[in-house]
Amino acid sequence: MTMDERKELARSFLGKVVRIGIDRPIGYVHKKETYALTYPINYGYIPGVLGGDGEEMDVYLLGVDVSVNEFDAHIIAIVHRENDVEDKLVGVPQGVIFTKEEIAAAVHFQEQYYRSHIEVLSQ
Image (cartoon, rainbow, N blue to C red):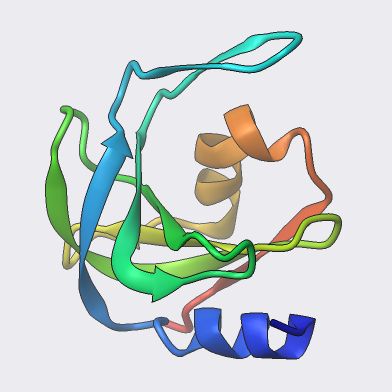
């Protein structure tokens, strides 16, 4: 998948409500070689939709403060990674709004390791 195809795919979800599966709920600890990453938010994927890495497209779920297994999320933003093969979507409960700064703060736990910028759905 080219970078243009990757960006186009991510943008196709902006403004839509999609059912996401959560494979890293709040509190999940992802052990890496040199550190352990604890997820302060729910993190999951869109089943059956492959992202730039060949795996199911990832989604940060904001605005849900309890662990969930799945969720109907309104996609309000994309975290574009400049030094990776994939981008991440940002989903929220319908009617919930986050600013670009709030999104950046919420996903910093993982995005601090990448050069990324956030594209937010126009309100």
